Amino acid sequence: MAFLPLAIARLILASGEGEAGWAIYQQILQTPRYLISLIQTVLVSLAVTIAALAVSTTAGLFLTRNRFRGRSVLLSILTLPLAFPGVVVGFMIILLGGRQGLFNTVFPGQVVFAYSIFGLFLGYLYFSIPRVLLTVMAAAEKIDPAREEAARTLGAPPHLVARDLLFPALAPALIAAGEIAFATAMGVFGTAFTLATNIDVLPMVIYTEFTSSANIAMAAALSVMLGMVTRAILFVARSFTGATVVAGG
Amino acid sequence: MRIGKVLQLSVTLLAAAFLLVPTIMSVLAGLTVNYFQGVRSGLTLQWVVKVWELYAGSIFLSLGLALACLAVTLVIGVPAAYALAHNPGRASRAVEEFISLPLAIPGLALALALLQLYGSYRGFRLSWTFILVGHVLYTLPFMVRSVQSVLAAIDLKTLEEGAASLGAGPARRFVDIVVPNALPGILAGALTVVTLSIGEFNLTWMLHTPYLKTLPVGLADSYASMRLEIASAYTLIFFVMIVPLLLAMQWASARAQRITQ
Image 1 (cartoon, rainbow over the protein chains, first blue to last red):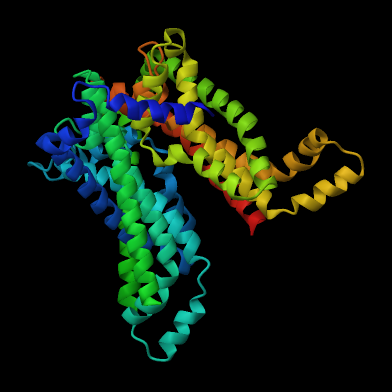
Image 2 (image 1 turned 90 degrees about the horizontal axis):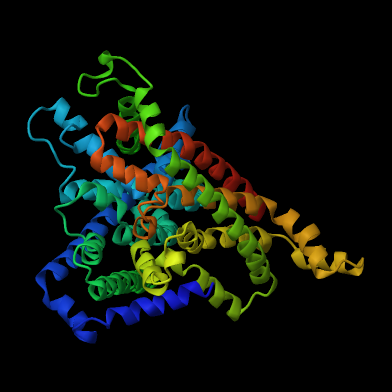
């Protein structure tokens, strides 16, 4: 187990061993290419988190509260991609939106989106849906629907029932699921590697710095930056949502 | 109310279609003579055979790695989970957080860190055990958590005291009391470790060498440089391996979870 702390310490040290020394972090913030890719990575990850929460919460609540034929098949389909590596997910998006993809075959024209930032967004959404769904469903199964029924019989409109009863009960699970989705989207590399040669997301930039430019200090510094920004955003999100839960209560 | 339900159902179905349609396309493409002409050109296993010729080595390497990774995580993870469940407290929580660190660090960063630290030991760098270290660090938290949650749910103290009063030493208690009771958690953890190790790419891509390509590394290679039918056939082989594992993993986790409730 000593591998881990040693390796991380070494990575942080390595980031300061370049020509620029520790000013390398300043350099990241002053170089548009790095800064833009950092912002782009954060924005895509945020968008994916919101979309995955919306889709998976809807589907998860529906699957928890309704029993019907084919439900378990539907559930299996929705959780299957859990075990797909990022590269395979990238390939799935190419099959949908690539040059020879489904959309370009059905609507011949220029419906190629696999290699754009939208394709990357879809890829991240693809592997986030199952993760968020499982977390939301685990929490939703513990909620007693009787409370909501009581509120409804007393005449509360649906949106108020959702706002005052359902979402507060789901909030911890939604936060946990959102954190997983966000952290995964920030760090995953396989999907971007398969899809995108044109999109600068941070993991791709780190990879090119390391392999093509052999700029090891910069690759290490960007990795440290990626990890820290992810942590920082999760921390802010947690204290922010914690605060609103308290205020709402 | 009814409109709401229809809307929920459509979102659910759309999401399922989004996930399922490309996998079906991929399976079909891997079995079709010519993808551009469609299924009408006939079904064939020639691409699967071709993939086997090209990439059988990668597939076996991944299986071997996954089993080795399982062995290591069992040997380290089960006693670690036992120790954590046995001595709950601040120190244990710190250790737990620490073991879980690789979940919070991007795989790429972890790989870079390992390369920085051990890249200069050429014998180690070029050996498959280098990739194994990465896989173990990444999968260990899943094993520990799975075993630990089952152990936390049973009354370990009473069971162990009973055994101790009958004269069983610590080693005997671990083998005869702890392991059998933790078995559902060990099974769920084991299936998770194997599934994750077979599919791991983020770390492995940085750690692999031209002579040590794992299954997902081979997949990336085929997506970049092979015709679509071969890439699809390779993906099909991957699905055939991973889907039963995933289903078994979900079954085992659900079973382990019932115990903890």
